[in-house]
Structures are given as C-alpha cells and as structure tokens.
Image (cartoon, rainbow, N blue to C red; front, side):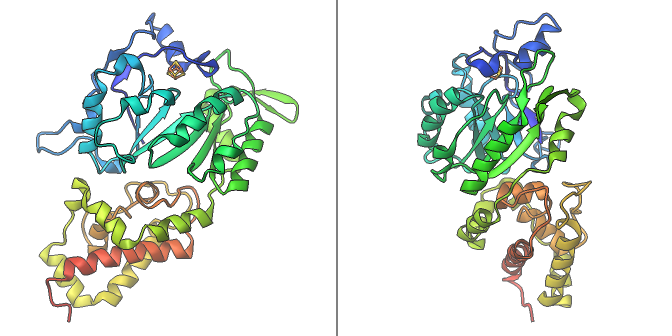
Length: 371
Ligand code: SF4
C-alpha cells in the first residue's frame, strides 16, 4: 500500500470529523489544518528515476489518495485536473479515494470519465445513520466502477441494507476512532454491519477497534499499536466466495488480458529467446505443472510474509507470465482479479490463475513452433 497526499489540510464537514487525526497531528506542530496546500508529493505517480522508469511501481500496492485531506474538497478544484491526468497515465496503478464529499463527485470528474476509470476505487465514508442516508443514495447514482463503504469512526449502529441490496457495493469496512478523545466504538455495531454484509453477500472488513472499544458492556482502552491487531484477532472478516466467482467468470481470461494490455508496466514483460527455447524443450504440460506448483507454494497461503516480493523477475517463463498477468502476488491478485487477500486460495481460484498464466504464455509462443 502506498499513500499519496497531493494536498494537505481540510475543512470539517460532519460529526466524523470532530477528532480528525489530521487536525490532531498538525496541532502538535502548531499548524492550521484548515489551510489547504499542495504538497511536495503532488506529482508522485509520474516521477521518474534516472533510467526513465516510474519511481512508484505497481508492486507497491494500491495508492491511497488524499489521506490528509479530501479528494473532492472545493479548495483543491484548480489542482484536480492534473491529478486525473496522472491517474489516467498510470493505468498500471490502482488508486483508492476515500471521501466524505460524495455530493461533489460528479462536478469534479474529468471529461473522459464515462462509467469510471478502471483503476479507481471510490470509498464513501458514513460515520452514522444520518450521513449514511444522506451520502449513500448519491454514491449509488455516481458513475463508479468500484464502490466501497467505510464506517469509520463508527459512532452508532448503522443500517445500510437498502444500499447493499443495490448490488453496487463491493465491500464495507468498519473501524473505531483513535486519539485521546476518541468516542466509543461498540462491538455490537460492528457485528450488526457484518450481519448486513453477510445477508447481501458483500465483503466485510473490521479494520481497527479504535482507542475506546466496548465489548459485552465493558469499555477497553486500546493503545494505537494494538488497534488493528485486536480487530484482526476477532476473526470476523468476510469474503463472499460466490460473488467473487461470478465476478471472475464474467471477467473472462480474454477480458483480463485485454485490460492488462493497456498497462504500460505489465506490457513490458515479454519472454526472452532463452525462455522461449526453455518452453519448447520442456513442453507446455510441464510448464503448466510448474505454474501449478508455483501458485501453490507462493500464492495459496492466507498469510504470506514477503507478499509482493515472492515472484522473481526472471529465472522461469512462469515468473515473467505472472508479472505480465498481475498474478505475481496476493495484492495484484486482489487488485486485478478480485481475489481477496488474507485467506487461502480455493482450488478454483488456483485453476483460474494457472489458466491466465498459460493463456499469456500460449500467446507469447504463437509465433514459434511449439512442436
Ligand atoms: S473530511 Fe476527513 S480529513 Fe477532512 S476534516 Fe473530516 S475527517 Fe479530517
């Protein structure tokens, strides 16, 4: 995961902003968070090194954009066009935008947005029922390819069933509030949102407990260092298998290879003559078995310590195919293929990954005689 803050500073807009961490952190340095300024990271996605390569690589995961501000803040209207240009240029990266200003979404779009860029997920924040009912109807009407909801800081029990029923929400995340004056997050509220997600087959993620966490009538003070770990320990995240299977079958191998062909980064991967002669020598059936082994060893487990680094850049044609098809690590699998991290791959998913890899290899080998 990468954080890209092209501007810094924000204006409080709703109850969730009361103890905003940007304000809290800036106040330690005597800084006024309500003043919005461009940052030195403004052009981060298009910065290049001396070799002319982008400094920010897709292997570094999703790019969380505007985490110390709001993407749709009016104060940033003059700068946003440049940001869209960068997002459009970096089709190999996936950008995540979290906002409390979904009401400004349509007026802030670039001319070629259409039904939404393929490399952007928009997450609408709802901290209480009032904000959910104000923002989510607008959110559902916006042209967005990947929509998620975040209930953070969660301030009360929230009912989002009508919005989940639309089938347009991919995932919901819950979390408490951090800081000294944090308001309580009640575990029952979290479980209630989870229940709703299960009922509608929507992925659910409990991100962190917050600093004051109530469970079974008792309030716990939880140090910031343990808030995520405690949430994970609850073991209540939910990934709806059926939806993901449907998503992937709808997204055929042909379609995913088409999408990947638009990525400058992925298109750079091609087989060398050495790798081509290796495939000819071994035959495709052997290569398939190698691919199955690699996937089982390096992608199958729920927890992978070196995720993002487990697939070498050379040494076997399958490795090259994995980078070309975004099947090199669990983050890429999640981003490009909709297969979530944090759990073991099913047999069907392993077969799917191998099919994508094999298809890419077949296409690379087409000009050569496989016999
Ligand atoms: S919208 Fe987000 S960044 Fe802006 S004040 Fe509210 S909580 Fe802070």
